[in-house]
Length: 546
Image (cartoon, rainbow, N blue to C red; front, side, top):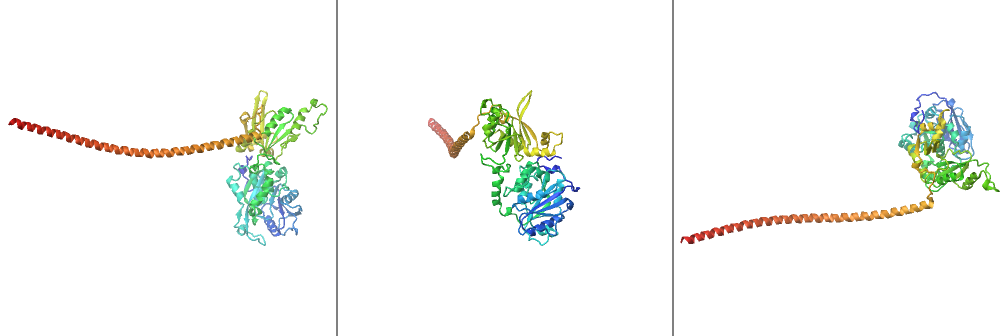
């Protein structure tokens, strides 16, 4: 089975297996003989076959020198490295190691009896794994001898909290995390020796952060990172990082920013150059000065500043005809080389090889120019969709297809580890990540590049945009205030309308009362008229009778 991304769950290592691989446990140590004795006693109890295990203790200049205790694995060796630093000590042990798997182990970490076997179960399943155990930090007093029941003695203990948190929020590092390499910690991690051969030893120039930096290179070499909860260990006391995290991060980040492009938050400066760029763009330098310049200039003017352009050509033997330069047969190459010779983000290569530590490689035909945000948009697409290869269709005709390629270096490294003799590498990349095609025009690629906005133009555009935002914000505030005023006036009008409705109601009631009174008066008047008429008639009748 081929692991897609970092989803190692498809591997399913068997509970029981026939051990075949040799493991070299490298233990760098400086002083603390009492802790080293306990660590070697823990290694002597491992269930993984002793004949397939070698232990190399590296004394990193201790005074007095360290010694090997009586209780230790058979064939344990003690070597000395006078150059100080964990990276130097581990590299000294690595140079002596003969195992198929390298198991890093700190000299204050005691493994539980089945820990090495739990690591090796995975390594027998696939040859490109980095397996990290689960450490717990105990403050129990150091025993004179290693107790039989480690858990009852060293508990309660604190978990390796940040690793546990990372594993839990990424579903065991399988949910597309961009930095699973962060779990490569030297305290209790094992690595296939082939991966270390491809990635190289620890960086002895670093003061701190060597484990993480090496983990990054292992990932770039194609590694899959596996957290194994059955590979348990106890750290004897808290680590220096637990005691001084902020101070350690301050020192570590100052150095690893140059070496780990994946830590984007450490590269917030908009115009800095770094030892390892985020992307390298490879351009054929033999296609003519104008074509090459159109492509390279567009790349350098883009929003993806964390970039290095690699121009490929026969630069080693390039000379200059100083008598008749216009007739120089190599004039096009001379112009390209002279134009970019002192550009810090351009390097010349005769082979086109790129550094495996660079996360992405763009291969772009000369004469085609990306838009200012084209490369940044392609990188965003690759990260979001977990793509190992993005093919950019530039032109299509009966004579063929012209395309650019954005390659994720780690995906191609994994594919090379897995590809069979007859397999196309792109097909294997599709298995371990994914492959997509996009339209170049959609992403702003063109044969006739637009004049770049430039940094000053971009600055002015930003200032204008900020001024527009401020103006629109002020206008929005004014309109909000006007709306508030209208709401207040509407409230007043509503209250006035309610009062008027009340007055109208009262007037209606008064009018009804007046109508009732008028009707009553009318009836009274009619009654009086009738009474007067009757009275007159009676009077006239009496007068006529006389």
